Length: 275
Image (tube, rainbow, N blue to C red; front, side, top):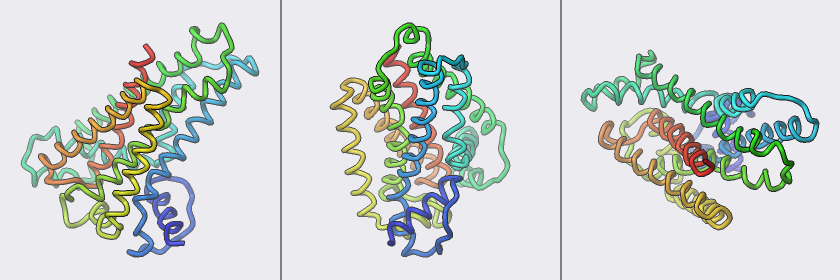
């Protein structure tokens, strides 16, 4: 029952999906970060649903649909499901890092509710990059290279699964960071979550599931799996260095920055591997 309440709190905090009301207390928040990757699983399911919809239109119903429209769907789904909470942290972190100010000033910038020039620029570049990468993925699965011959649906679906894994991996590593990384401030959401959560259990939970997903990716997809896992761990290590060096630890904003960076780097790996 406690885990279910923690899961509800995770969805009410990290997604825009409707969720029942649950009291915010330390007991109900205990396993909240363990449930955080489930939000990524929901995003993955919606990505898969949009993928299946595209296949149905193009190859089953023989309807014409622009690859740009499919790519737009892939770009917007994560934002709609998450409610933009991670994107907000990404923008604030871009502002803070671009300031080249002292650690204290950077932490103040993170708390500022106004968006600076570098936050807007970072957001524009992020969406542009995400859309272009999504289009390249659409071209690979739906474009002229594959439209001349109908490829078995199951084969298409299996080849698409590594893409949706990045939404789960990014949140597993983010939750692991909350349980193990130093916290920059004695206030804020990350400090609240870290203080209330069962840190050892959360770290072990995230480690085991990340290991299982990584082994599955490597076993079934070989080099692509290795590249995805390696890229995720690389940005995770980079996240630690950037957070500690610039802020003295992680915050809610830097956690959002990491999730967005991890996801888009995963898309880069997938596009490069399919070139």
